Length: 77
Image (cartoon, rainbow, N blue to C red; front, side, top):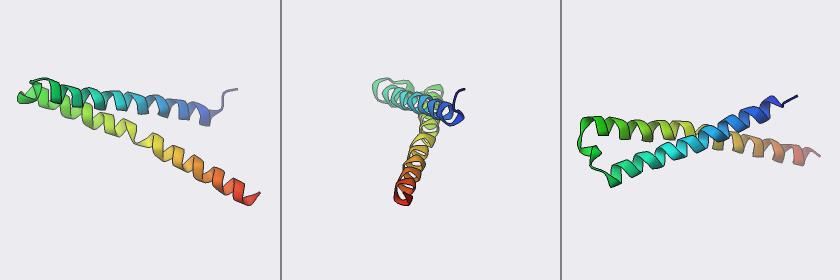
């Protein structure tokens, strides 16, 4: 049987890397094209950067919580 925590971590890891990719694409479009001069380009760039940051955010928090639980378990032994 698949561990539900492990599957959630894999999903969060995938979403984290998808967020990094969206952030890099948004910054790349902003810096390397003239789309930022048009309204539709501004919308695309802000959406990519915003959603990228939102998708990236939960994974480091979960890693910190796991680290803290490991530290607590090691100190109790």
